[in-house]
Length: 75
Image (cartoon, rainbow, N blue to C red):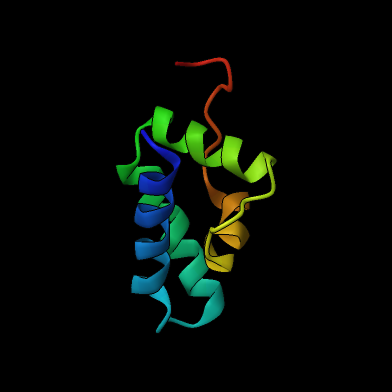
């Protein structure tokens, strides 16, 4: 997966939940990523976050604490 595609999809999820109260938006965004993103996609997200998370919506950055972190050595 290309980083630009991961950013686009993650930010679309953030946009969807923008109308929710902030705490609920973080929870729902994390739940969506946990339920619908496979471990490789979440690995890519966490690798991008480790590099500073440039381009990610702040909601996704905040939700990261609630996103299941895959093994970083997984493909």
